[in-house]
Length: 354
Image (tube, rainbow, N blue to C red):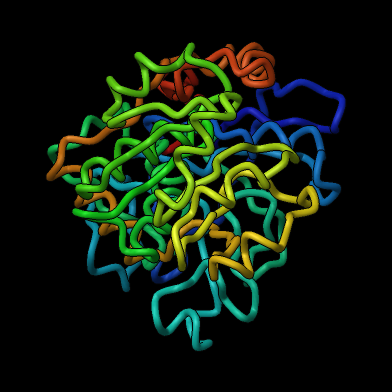
């Protein structure tokens, strides 16, 4: 399948139009026309090779929403015309203990990421959703509920499931007390989801500047982390804190806020952690944990939950040719709260069969 996307050819080059060919359909493959694709901070990190493992050309995008245009002969759950979605992974071994229990993100033999991964059959570099078409194995294709706005679904496939999974893992719900550190792409979804699950939600911020936004998104209150008195009064008052800060930072101020058996869960930063003080951990049986995304079943559960509750992210729509400007704005945190690319702005090549 001949198609077109936007890719970076090196860590220093901007994303630019890139014509390439998707694989011929295997028996259990679904081919999609991509309608919308969210922009994740991981897309920026990958194209700039910030983590040191990027393969070029790098064609990012793992918040993909589209329409089925072709299916392989063994496909049973999706048909041409269906609205579907693809998140952060497109394959796994499907046989290890983690895959069998629906935790494909922790596949013992390595999941295949939607981009910058290795195709399990050919070993080729996977190319993501900043493109007109994508081909994915059916077990990794999600159904989009009719109640959701297609243009806003994309970020649910990364920011949504990244925050939903720890909320479910630590049983957030009525009677639980959830804190959210950071009110960006991840944080605003954590607030919406925790509130919809019935938890009492507190946003922790260094200043009061985001208080109005936090309350509008569903938070019950805002705790100013630079206010020593307010922080002291909040000791032992949280069951779970979701930390969405994407850079190295000090988690020590948040540890005393946890109640006995409370958890601080990191979902933003990837890399070294500033040294934590173990005293609050030991004295309160508190813990610092991490969480990735969720498995396919949990991601579908999250989409269905969002449809029932009317939850979608706050997004700014852009055209494909605006992606380099969007990356620059992303570095400045100049977005409320997530970019989504309208792929209608990317014309199909003249010889594309769809």
